[in-house]
Image (cartoon, rainbow, N blue to C red):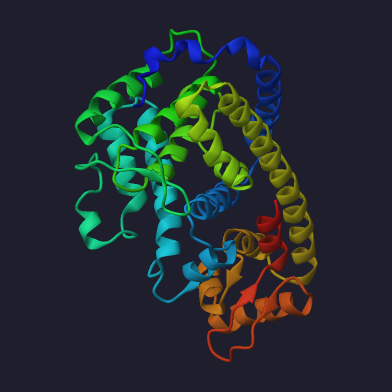
Length: 357
């Protein structure tokens, strides 16, 4: 049976994590400085959103790539694919959550709304009816073989457990470091398993939103899914252990993943800056038009393009847009496919950067 948080105060000693907290705070501080000085939020934030959506889908067993998401966005009828819908849902949920938390505390309706936004359009018609509602029957947590590894509290007790967790999330007077609280919060939320589906997705969103609300970061886009997905099995094993023993190893794992993710984001921003400046300078010499700046923005916001898409963004004819794209392909900035109609052009440097960082 899952213990309430008030019964688990002896299951961890915050003094054991001094070194991990110092390191995590250091890299989060560096990251915050990078984000604060970054001039192109319209480029950075969508890319971070898409990368985290891919990572959280991987944790949940869905295999996709950054190219899949951008391919879908350029389709004549976008958002027809569940992968693209899920990525879009992820963005909507984090934006809604960050705006809500500017003036409101965590609450039952808020967490239920996150659940609805996250799963709309990607579950069965029957499950759509339960979105934004706590589970109406008991559920279980299983491993990849389908074996039950933990039985969450009964659906009749969900609200009671969530009442306590929400109070814990909103309490700023308990003296606990917010990074430690985020680790405990995530473990408890996943253990309560309050929804019939989507608990992992919502639980990882809550990490970002909690750290934002607690002012550990001044932007809500610090996503843990990428770092967690690199050690998916360890993540699940640590969560299981945290339910039955003490929190020590789970908290230590969580703090180390905070460092990994912060360093990943720092490297990503630095690489993105370098590529943007290099590409912009190259475009300036190739494109004999003041529109080279806007073309650079198009490449970085939608690295898979068609002449129709570029024509609309630049307010030029499709023929002129095709000339621009062909010039960039000739300069080996873009790689075109073999289609005769609706030919697509790929900004490989950015797609590769997004995949590897």
